[in-house]
Figure (tube, helix red, strand yellow):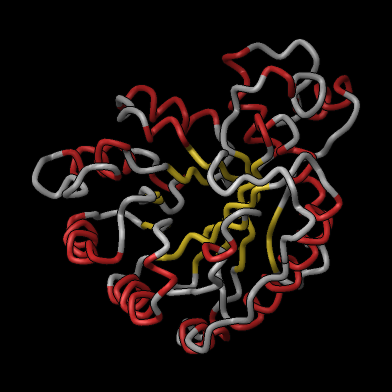
Length: 305
């Protein structure tokens, strides 16, 4: 992930901003007394990483088996392949069949939608994408749209037309500075997402601290956490996230999807495993994370599924 990447971290303030005033109202409106099912989903951004064989996949694992082994280690995925093409029904059914019952796919919206001037609102791509992703059924988490750096606050009307047409659970990530440099733009954005019951994507990355905005618009959330080769600050940042999420779960948050990014994603499981360990103290929050260890033991464990 190149967005917001820095080589020198010495001057970065990684502290998370305080909660915006509206978060309490959003979460308490979800009625925490009914929010007995609280889930933390921890995942990476793909399963086709051969370097994970012997690390989180058993020794000798073959490429067609990667998704099955991935789903036994993680309980969600930032599904980037859908950013480049709409999969056919056979592929979607295969993904569904390979994943565990508690697994959730979070498909990234097609690039020819997210990077179009009209966000696909003048064609049939939105409908086709939603129909295809709907095939994931009970294993579908929120889709997410990553708006490009050139999509600024002046295009909020285009975003609203897109939200009116998108029929699946959704979260939105914005990158243009104008969404955060002007308080009125920030307010309009998050009011719009709340109006359509669309969640936010919070991105924690070194070079763009404004996109770690902490705004919640529903009782669900996507976090994209970008590490720096397991630098010590990666782990202190995870401590901060564990504390913040525990607070939000206590207030009524129902689901958080937390995706770990590392350069080339080779170390993403290490970061995910560390985060899972740091969140085990959370009361009544269902979660699981990868277990790093002996590949032979992993293989024996996975045959039990």
